[in-house]
Image 1: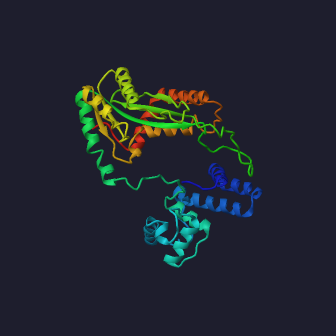
Image 2: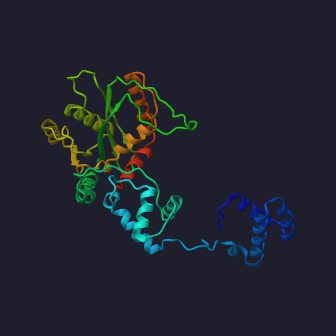
Length: 344
């Protein structure tokens, strides 16, 4: 049995271990309605045991039946734009309006909130998806290219390596922190600094082996005419380093970045018998576990940090990446978050 109120649990424990007469003597020190509840529980306990104390459910019928809530879910699935609002944001007020229009029933905002929570809803930040994304291709990729990659890796006793790159600036990611109400915390940052640090990182997986993370930073030189991202030669050198550290063949999975498809990169891949490459579907970063590495880095070691110099930024990035390297369960968790399985 689960009692929703903490004090109710305390009263229940009290009369469970004492006699009815003792419980009756204890109850005058509590409000009358609570004392009567305790006495009623005691009589039910004496008569039917624990089963008699189980909740019989809400005393009133819900305003929306299960069938009607199913219809409401279908309306919510159509999105706010289909109901005349300009954006894709469901608020309690908008859901209340839809209920009124569809079922001619009135709810308070708190009533709508409780209704949604009772049916498994929560307030969430939506994920972004590109309109150019081909969902059929994304859905079929694990059974297509990934299955072929698993077979190739098993045949060659190779590592499956996911690679991605990201950029970090002197402006830190913002994370929630405690502060007094009405006094918004302030983080002082350098507004004029446009220096960026680029990181390329392969996440390496092999059944029966400890997952590995290799990374290489590249600092922006600050010149307007200078290159701000990795060249194909940088990726070539990174793959050679990964091959040397892993000590075996590599099945590489990465996106369709133009540098990955450069002529020099393609020629290099064709000449290496230890390297097999598969492309991720376009606009599908959620299939790449390295995206989870960036999320851990931004939400953990980089958040709310007032960077003073580019050296401070790169030192913090290195510290966070080393922490992740020493925790292979975090690397495995990033792979699990994609929903991909490397064991055929």
